[in-house]
Image (cartoon, rainbow, N blue to C red; front, side):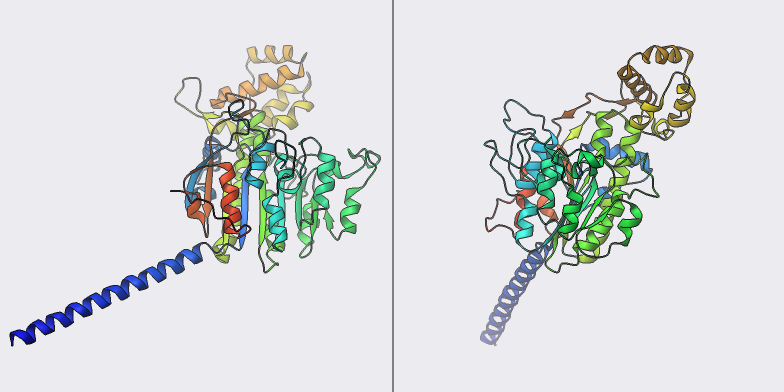
Length: 454
């Protein structure tokens, strides 16, 4: 009886060991399968808020009155942004930062996807084209401006926008939407080109559908598209003619629809380009609305990714602009209600002001009733246009208690937010070049494995 009992115990023990091994093996297989599924990235949508630091995101949330869509994203991290040489210059421009995001390499400020010896650096967009994916660029700035240019062209000068336009058209990019029409037209057609070439006609000959209004954009359902909606940058959201000029969310919606027709997948870069320029102007109300508009484009990307399951969405910035603070001057307060009174950007308002109309225009467009002392100051300011700009900027920021340390860029780290397969890879502290390296790996555009974040 004793031997029988021992035999039963041994059989039970063996069974427990077998079952334990089985369940552990099953768990490992399932975990491996889930890990593989999590890293099967077919599409990437990279959204870049130009100049958008953490304070900008907070400003957008407060201005909207509810949480931003980008704040709902699963994984969050931060990125450094410095160009090279690091020891001499910590503050990047959009060209060097765009190059880092587009190629995974550092370069000098002003350089567009070329190294320090001015040799071309292959971009993720070019690699995606080689893999037979569709690719697109969307921006509210000029399509030839530094950030989109870094994905589509190679030049040692970001200012060579006529040359950048020519290279961009010849690249075979499926979707190009933004401003910058002037760099595609000769001076004889009210453009900026010296070579008398009409690149819009060249694009049509290459098979592009060309559009320059919201209505025309809505009609396009397939094929390659070039949309240029302004001679220069597109309008700030606060100034946008909604009947004619598409929003960044509408451009993103169209881009995703067209690019997703390729079964092999796509890469799309979307830039909220004018967040940066409003911050250069220290115009917080204008920046706030462009941040919210950019976040609407984030929602478009997230809605698509949630249905698609194989799309990675990344939101980041190339750098921070302005050194903005919500609350300033030692005062423990911020007054967003003052910013909500504003109906025009300072950029659009300033050229219209005269000594005869300024008081009425400032009250109607900025919601500001000038004091007697302020009236005297602005009359004196009419002698110098820059003085009026400074005067009105100071009034807006003083009333709202918004602080700025600069009218340029800063060296502040920028946020990274990610959703979709592989998103967990961005939940750490990294350099901006690592964003490109991880994207390239997840799209299987390189055979080289990079070190995963700890």
